[in-house]
Amino acid sequence: MNSRLPAFGLFLFASLAGCSSMSVNYDYNHETDFRQYQTYDWIERPAQLVSGHLAQNPLSYQRAVNAAELTLEAKGFRKDTRNPEMLIAVHGNVEDRVDVRNWNYHYGYWGPWYGGGVEVNQWTEGTLILDIVSAESHELIWRGWASAAMDPGQSGQGEKITQAVGRILENFPPPQ
Image (cartoon, rainbow, N blue to C red):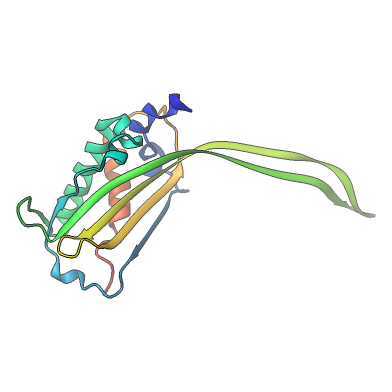
């Protein structure tokens, strides 16, 4: 398992961006008027995140930040380190997954018969999360995340990270 932690730099972004099985979701505080927000800055990463998966490869963290900044700028938001209206955090997780299906019966001409098999699938799944917090109230106002099977051996992470973060931020700000 520890051999996969440094691979977080190769992260799920490798498969998130170009993979049709990528799951992208978001949730938000429906009472928030997102039109009031024009500026943002980054939340300083807490100690538990610094020692977490994204810390294993700071390049991936920086790629995610850069991609988010490009996307937010294209949407009309600007970075303001002195007096931001929103604060953003990026974090993620990598997990080994197993799916076991027991096919112990079949249907035939004379009814069910037994003696099927077991199908076992193993994969690594990565999740990337972007949290947006009100700088005034310090409450979470929007969260977007993407999950997908990942291939830590793929290269060309910069473009893939940009695409994955862009997919997450397609839903920000949410419709009024």
